[in-house]
Amino acid sequence: MYKTIVWPTLDEMFQVLNENCNYLVLRNYESLNELALSQKEDDIDVLCDDTVQFVRVIGAVPINKNDNIHYVLNTNRAIIRIDVRCVDDGYYDENWARHMLDNRIMHESRFYVPDTENYYYSLLFHGIYHKDTIKKEYVIRLMNIARSLGKEFDERKLKYQLDSYMKEKKYVDTGYRSLK
Image (cartoon, rainbow, N blue to C red):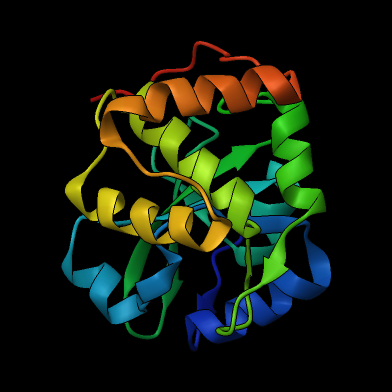
């Protein structure tokens, strides 16, 4: 069922994805590098509108056959873990996930990422609701993004800021919680 592909580079994989899938890299794309990924416990987190198509195009292999989220993909340089989220899997509100895909932008490294506003709030949501804490590296990133959006950044008010945004947009917390 799964056809393994060995990609020469991540760049070439993203080039094929750009032509065949509606996706975006959710976070940590600022330093997306296959060699760095192979040396750490990091992974690539993506959102797409069709997991089956996405996985087929990149030739990813599931880590657990009962799990439609965690995969590995191969490049000539590394085996890389990739978490594939779909708009209707409950990771984010489905309307919000579709909005993120509809408003994605092309990163300078030639793969899709959330627009600035969606990146800010989805990163907040990830820290607050998926992980119950915001990593220090995310705090710095969030501060810079807030500044670019002209928003106040106060760590004590982030949950309130996120909840207000979600209420305004009519997005709901799906109750999804990551396994720790």
